[in-house]
Length: 116
Image (cartoon, rainbow, N blue to C red):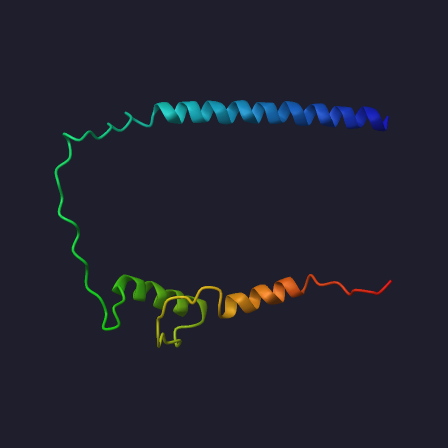
């Protein structure tokens, strides 16, 4: 009786998964057709030379204001609105809190060694 039930459930699972696969494939095919025309490849005759983009404004420390705004928003969201960004500097490779966190994580895998 148990084997019969297991086989029945297995067959139902296979049939349902096949039906779902067919439905998904049909949806992809239909949506692919309604996506419009494929983009036209760009050839060299279509392009015109463009001058390199001028560098945008920077803060007194030389940072892009967009980056400063993103960092400030992340700090305000993560902590609270009273947090203030005092200094922004590039990350120092593997130094700082990341290496300490990595060391703590790897240290948690240490098992007690017993002499034989």
